[in-house]
Length: 87
Image (cartoon, rainbow, N blue to C red; front, side, top):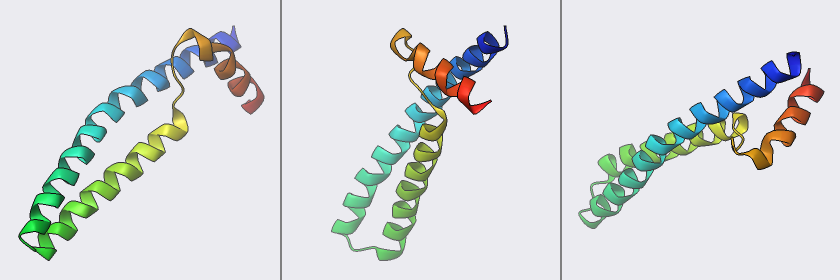
């Protein structure tokens, strides 16, 4: 019963991670496009702000990846093994 709860929690975390990564990827891509356009006009201060947005979205993406696993059936056993060994 406990392992089923852990597996369910893993699937929940993976789903949340997936949903958070979608907007973060979009933010990162848009910021990179804006940064390229700004560089054409050499506005260094604004370019630095946009670069910070890119870096922070990548940082958040990396943090989320440490918690996520694909919720698909192929990774179900992997998640159960990880949660069992962690606890």
